[in-house]
Amino acid sequence: MPQITITARSGEKLVVDAEVNQTLMEVIRDSSIGEMDAICGGCCSCATCHIYVDPSFISKLPPVSEDEDILLDGSNHRKLEVSRLSCQIRISDALDGFALEIAPED
Image 1 (tube, rainbow, N blue to C red):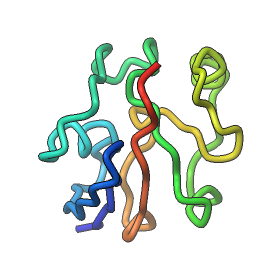
Image 2 (cartoon, rainbow, N blue to C red):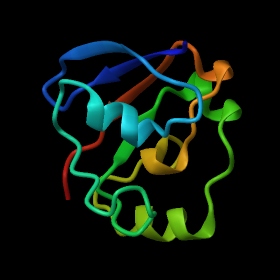
Image 3 (cartoon, helix red, strand yellow):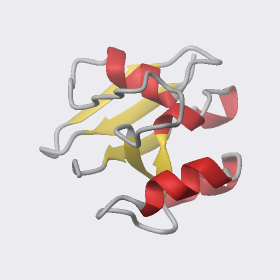
């Protein structure tokens, strides 16, 4: 079971177990941090699951889709290389040790 390190907006870090095929949004939402609104439930239509990905994992992720890119462009907090929507990233064994930071709310 892959382990994911989540850094909250407060700086608090939490290491959680994630099931393969869950989305990162589901993992974060189900953690005890409670900072992720995920209003659309993972439909890639709201960007309230914006995260910053540890740069060492960027190459292990699928490319940003056009819809995801458009939503991220609407954020005042986008960091071009590391911003992603957590609903668009599925957990795999290759993501064991994955680290992310929850982006500030817009």
